Structures are given as C-alpha cells and as structure tokens.
Amino acid sequence: MDGTFDLKGKRVFVAGHRGMVGSALLRRLAREDCEVLTIARDGLDLRDQSGVRRWMAGHRPDAVIVAAAKVGGILANDSFPVDFLQDNLVIETNVIEAAFRSDVRKLLFLGSSCIYPKLAPQPIPEDALLTGALEQTNEWYAVAKIAGLKLCQAYRRQYGVDYISAMPTNLYGPGDNFDLSSSHVVPALMRKAHEAKRTGNKTVEVWGSGTPRREFLHVDDAADALVWLLKTYSADSHVNVGSGEDVTIAELARTIVSVAGADAEIAFDPTKPDGTPRKLLDVSRLYATGWRPKYTLRDGLRQTYAWFLEHVGKGDIRLGV
Image 1 (cartoon, rainbow, N blue to C red):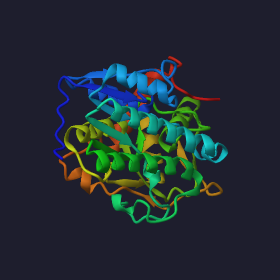
Image 2 (cartoon, one colour; image 1 turned 120 degrees about the horizontal axis):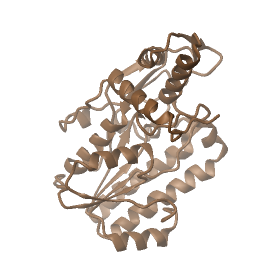
Image 3 (tube, rainbow, N blue to C red; image 1 turned 60 degrees about the horizontal axis):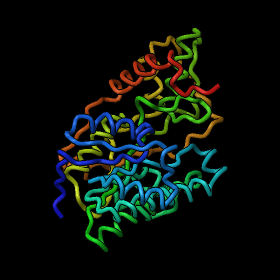
C-alpha cells in the first residue's frame, strides 16, 4: 500500500485536541493546506458509540488522528483500573469503527511507550511488543493501548484500509501539567526550579538517586513526526516516535535548574523509587523515513519554560496546591 497521503484540501479530525499532544497537532496542522475538525468533550462524548457514529457520518473526515485517551499517573492507574482499561478501549474502538463506517481514508492511532514489556531490551525496538510482562503500575492503560494498535492492524488486514499507529516516548512542552501531585518528571522539576528561583530556596528535591536514564521529546517535534507519518507512512507495524537520545534524571534536573535560572543545588531523595533503570526507544524505523527532531533537549526546555512564564501569571496553567 502506497503510504503517500497528500493533506492538501483534506478534512482532518483530531480526536483529543485539547490535550498537550492534540494541541501540538493543531499547531502543526495549521501549516498544512487542510481543514482541521475538532469537537469538545461537552459536544461529543467519545465513549458514546452512536454519538461518535453520527458525528463521523455527518462530518466525513478524510483522515483521523486518535489522540484522545484517559491518562493519569501511577496512583490514578492503580486506583481506577476499570476506568483506564474500559474508557480507553471504548474511546478507541468507537473512533476507529466509526472512521471505517464513514470511509475515512487514513487513520493514525497514538499509543504510548508503556505498551512495551517492563524488562524490554534497550533501546526498545517495535518488535519487543508482547514479548514480556508489562509494568504493573500502568498495565491497564497499556493493555488498552495495545488493543487499539492491534485493532488498527486488524482493520488493515481484513479490509485493506490505511490505518497506522505510532508510539511516542516521554513528551514535554507547552500545555503540560505542572501540578506536582500528578505531573510527570519534566514539568515537576520545572515547577520546583521555578519555585526555588521565586522563593530563593537553595535546593531542588529530586526523587530517587538521579541515575535512571530517560528519553524526552518536545511535543512540537512529536506532532511534526506524527503529521510526517500521516503523510508518508503505510505499514502494518507501529512506529516508535522519540529523540533517540536519553539522559540521566540528574542531568535533566541540572539542565532544568540552569534553564530556569535558579541558584539552587539538586537534593536527591533515595527513599523515593527510581523506577526502571533505562527507557529508550529504538527510533531507527522512524529515522529511516527521513524525519529528524528540531529541538535539542536544552532548547526545548528553554522554550517550554518561556511558555510556562508567559502563562503562569494568567492562571491558565494547572499548578495544583
């Protein structure tokens, strides 16, 4: 199947446009000569099968990007396993099935790197999927995402439609969640560094030893890669989307403190968990298509902190208590 899909004049539905990735996709698609379709949650509950079918039939998009999902951290996954498994299964099934009913020509499903086994080889190749046990703390979400990926493969094999999947690595950037009770590592450290700078605090606390290695990708780079795949890729296998580089948490923390301009030292808390020692995606399949990220980690963090400063005073950033 030829993967070339010209977006010119096409109607592209972004499901989940208000999330960090969805918002980045809207920014990226604004540079394409296409019409972007969105619908707010209060206008359409993606868990409502008949409602999704009616909306899709009425708007007839040419392409669909499934960025909608119920997401949360370890505590939320552990506390609400039914919600994370059932809601995500229903959302993805409804959108993909309605897209097929409405003759959508191209569909891109977004997964998550948590779909891979807890003890996957590093860097993690796409074919590591389903070769081992999942990380227990987010297995409900991971199982749902694996099901969505497999559903796209099933539609390709049974009906010959051009449905593909992509697996982004850890993302950060504008629109992130800076609530310390539920945020991921980049916005959490950025918030802590900002507070240290604001209050004159001389230490920034970092959970664990600082030795685990993690990969990070700016969300605008991720959106660029996803639109690139939408336009150029067509194959049964999903594609890892990442930077291809990782850093220690200690290196990340020091870079963020430097970017924020805080005069503070890093204080590690070894009583807190480190998690898996390393998590890096093998992005050779993506890079073979000709795509490369634009942001270095430092430049991406600098851009994100500038966005944070611009928006924090407006009260439109989720800070929590």
